[in-house]
Length: 221
Length: 272
Image (cartoon, rainbow over all chains, first blue to last red; front, side):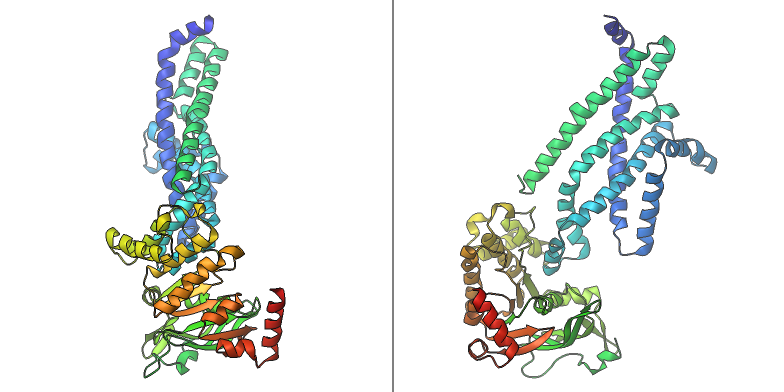
């Protein structure tokens, strides 16, 4: 089997690349979740200045290409004296970009919590921040989990772009293999299989399990 | 606002200070006047029921008292102190959040759709306020909550989430949750309107017990005329944002003095 030979020959590089992709994915997701929560809440602030900052952020990062943002962070920021390591620039760009989409998910979910829940919290004389953290956010979390399942897969696929600033992820490695061997079908075929397996066999089941666990915890199941 | 509030006392003093006073209270939604210079006093320990056609401003009265709505004119006093305003430089200015929170601690409310927190158990719902707001220890809060769940007959459901409870059970937990904050005024906003007919009595019997055993001041909006008549000290008939007629239930239900009251009562009785 020629493909088995291919895997045997290039297995080490493929595994190294996959490990880097997994790290990029987890770090980008962490950035995206933090940024989404922060800007989602800021977007709902009563303060116009805070709200405007959030709107500006979301507009810029949703309105332009992830690849352009990646190049900006890696190639343009150094011109302003900000030098980021390529690994850091990679997951940061993906996380900041996806976080802008996530912020809208956070905002939408908070607004989807019934008004009666806020009012009951007011009737218990809870201060505003406590109303948000104790009453509204836990319910919003449950509402936004399914769309986050999609976004997390987008984050995984988005990390493939970091190969273009020479982060040695899976995509970078298969391109190198292709250049060296001209075995395009095997190289890019493997990439497709690995990305699909990670999304289908890892990310989706994890998100489902999280949804079920949260539903149980909130008495919905 | 400040100039206009010049004619309102900074606080109510002397004998017979009402627990609640609405003085010339106005509420508008855009061009729609929901409350029109409403005057209403509720004495300490009094049970006042508000009835009237939908859109007459009944629920707005309770929501304004709970500070869920802003005020467009007039002043609301609670326990002699302004609720919607506070005293600054010998005058009344709109209340800030610290003043609102201090005054709000005297008031509890139950809602038509219960509004229990779905992610907490019955016990968790009752403990939330005492722990998070009153800063009681979990042990104290649990003791207080269990006592109240016992009173409303829900102690055995302490670990159930609201989604596993019937409407009547949820409303009883909601009453316990509100009482756990030890309010001096309780507001009941159509608490039986979303219930199936056969469970309404679960909730009304709890309220009946409250009236007979606690010295709470209560305001209730309801469509249950029989219940209103049985437990109220006074019934107010609202029409178009003001009180058309009020009096002891026997009087108002037996011999309404106004044509609109008669029409409303006839319509309600016919529907039943």
